[in-house]
Length: 95
Image (cartoon, rainbow, N blue to C red):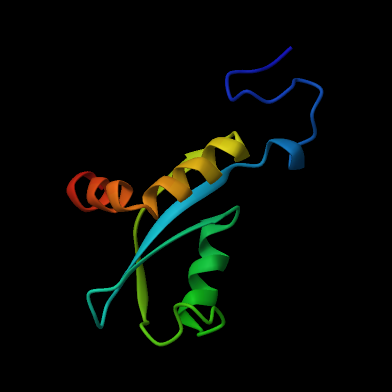
């Protein structure tokens, strides 16, 4: 049996942790970054501290938007979509 989030009622909190697909916007350039995490604050802190090699030279960053998912597979699929050409166009226009 599942609750509204799709988590099994017998599941632990860890098994039902939300996954966040996020878009960061550089404050110094026109760069954007799409990622996935289960802790938005900690991940943004790492990006701004230069601890993420891919984003370290474009910071500081601000959180432009995020979408929460209770299903990890859906979160991964959406992140992958946002990193594609049609997904980038969607994000630029709608998010």
